[in-house]
Image (cartoon, helix red, strand yellow):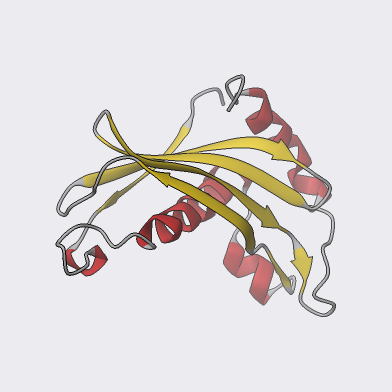
Length: 143
């Protein structure tokens, strides 16, 4: 697969704050939601399966977001997910949230695979390494 992954969601009234724009922390929620969709569609990793059956998790351990322009319902938010680095137990992403061509936010996020029993990082399951390598190969330079 060579095309970038974009997760689309409709912004709703429930996403807004008293100023009638999307509440700032929702951008992190949108990022986590988009990474979950990316993992399932592009890598074949279901968070439900990881937690329920394998007793693993992949929490976000780093989130950094820059806000560029406001978001309001009922716009469609497209969140582009780009894998920029894969470690032994971590995945680093650059995400960009857009409404049409307008960038609303962008940021970097790190997710780590860990074992529930120990609370310690574990290696990314070997069966997913080839798909992760394919995703790294399509990342633009400097992403």
